[in-house]
Image (cartoon, rainbow, N blue to C red; front, side):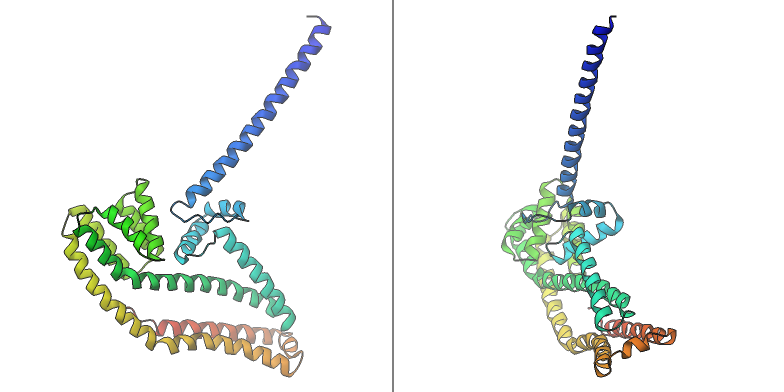
Length: 313
């Protein structure tokens, strides 16, 4: 083959290969982006879309591939907060850094890491508090939920239809959680799996009893109406009992939070009375050990008070 013919042919083949390579890279990038978007959408199946633009989508995808991220997502779903695992982790890190700098500047450099650890503890306790508050509200709605399901099944409606109707009539959080269950049932999930995920999100004895009743009745075809009627009365009695116990233990719960607050306040008071006192105190290993021991004792006191005041009904 002539050299004058080979050069244009080689150039043309090279350009074609480059065009195909660029097209392939573009198709790969588009496919990867669509796959990531689909995975992000499927991971939020059953959750109410807010339309708010997420700032940490990449971090969300990485966290959801880890066991810790999945547990965190389940915990956030139980709180009802409009946060993703990436949002929570980013905000928690920002809070830790801010508390670190504040503790280091207001008290002493030694207190920077301690206040950072307190920031992590506060974030976890905030999640637990939001989750427990939502569970309590959901438990308070269980008698009305059982009543609606009993009336719907007595009218001849199927249990799936009754759950969808209860989701429309009840307010949050019961309405939102039942909407997720109805959505999962519409996508083909079984009744056992959908209700099982509900008990995982909002664990409580009352909900477990209700879910067990519904699942067994759905499997065996028993008397759903009579079982739900009896369960409604039981849930009403447990609701009143829990309210009385919560009222009696309110002072004890406030004491558990007041103990560590008084300890931290004493540090600010000490540093305010004599400037630089904390610097000198934490400048030696003995002082650092004393401060760490004091923080540990306050934490143990908080946990013990909470444990001793916990009454299972």
